[in-house]
Length: 107
Image (cartoon, rainbow, N blue to C red):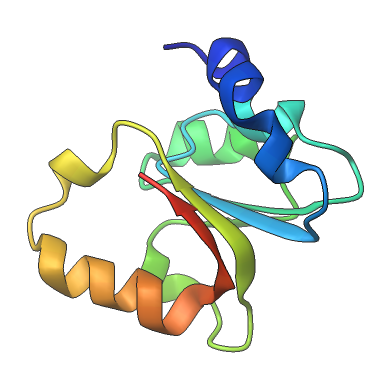
């Protein structure tokens, strides 16, 4: 599913939020669709894609571990990403416990 179709399907959840982090953001196509007032974070291990996502996000990180501890998000998104993670349990705990600001998580 491309970013526009995905956003159309779930956009109601992004109406009254202040921040979002997309893990596996690629070039930031999904983040580009979000309201400009939302603080956006792109986590993308590919250097070229992460640099492109810079155009649509306020923060860019190579890995979830790189996100400062004081930075939390209302929504964390992962589209076609979780199945590529080697140690899913450790990763999920890191995302859910440390970076999740009592909001919603889309996987």
